[in-house]
Amino acid sequence: MKNLFFILLINFLSAQQSWTLQKSLDYAATHHPLVKQATVNIQKNDRQISAAKGMLLPSAEAGVNHNYNFGLGINQSNNQREAVNTQYDQVFAQANLELLNWRNYLNISLSKINRESSTFKLKQVQNEVKLNVINLFFNYQNSKSWLDVLETQISGIEGQIKRTEKEVEIGNRPKSDVYDIKANLGTLQEQWVSAKNTRDLSKINLLNALAITKDSLEFQKSEENLTDANFNDPDLVKSLLEKNPAYKTVDSEINAAEKNISLAKSAYLPVIVGSYTWSSFYSKTLGETADQLSDQFQRNKSQQVGFGLSVPIFNKLQVKNTVEIAKLNVINYNYEKLLIINNLTQSLNSIKVQFQNAEEKYTLLQANFENQKLSFQKSEEKYKEGLMDAYTFFIVRNNWLQANYNIINSKNEVMQQTELLKVLKAD
Image 1 (cartoon, one colour):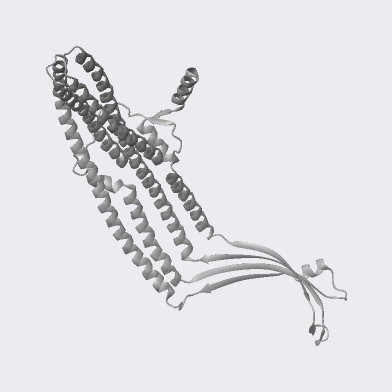
Image 2 (spheres, one colour):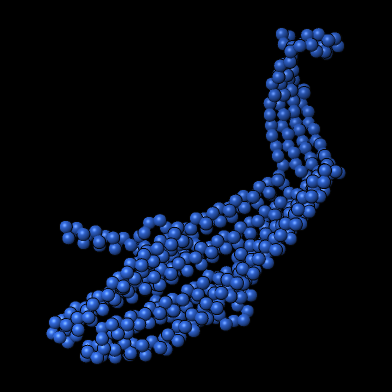
């Protein structure tokens, strides 16, 4: 039974893949459903461009008609009205072409702008997905670090209980020290349960951000030196704003809205069309003889070439209102641009401030870390020599472990803001 459990444990561990932040970002940028939807939208816009260009091509069709006519009619031989039952067959082919319609050309331009906009939207979606993954990735790392701290505390306090119990037996320590330590152990165990729940939930949230439903991954932070994020550049926010895909998207949508004004105005312009028709027919009176089908078709062939000019004069003010609505849409998109600029500026400034604060905090923690380490070592020596009671040493030990967690958490915060900046800087 033990061997079976060991085999299952090994298989479970080997089945779990270890992903770094970069691998998580690469996966999310290509496999997330929102990204795939945005990719499909680009393909749809490619088709719309092709359809708009297709409107410049002629349309052609061919057909056959076969009809019977029963009842009174004019007999062509004597010009008298009498009962005439006839058969009529027709073959035709025709082609139509819009020789001049500005709407077709404007639709092509609009389709290209929409295609460009969909490309920016794809990049925008990828950025949003990546930024969410980064935040949740470091949330998970922090929750794991805190759980590790608590497990270290619990492991250490359990060993401390055993040592203290032995010292109580030989009379070196009072029995109350054991009770104090066990009470603290219960408190830590409660915290461990909460920390484990937080870690599990943070991993579920991270998997959800990656659109992965099966928990077969473990996320590891790659150990790397902190890089200079250049947050002190005074033009940083402005440069990031101008290259942000959300900003480019709304710019493209404004261009599309302006093109829609021209498209609406094109309904005021005339349209010139051309057409060509070829046809022939066969006709006979039922019950009577008639010329051969091939002879009639040859004799009755006809061709027609036509040109048409359509000039709009009055259309119930529909075009005028459509133009005015298109102009209002441009104004609306400009206000939308101001909102996006405001929101992006706030987000970028927040990242900048959080990075600077986290970097300053990390620097201070690093400077004080060695002092805390020496303080803990001295306290540990005093406890072993009986110069410090168990509860005081428990507090000192927890402070030391908390200091370890604080410096890890602070470093994660610096790395997190740096990774966020990398995404925003990417073209």
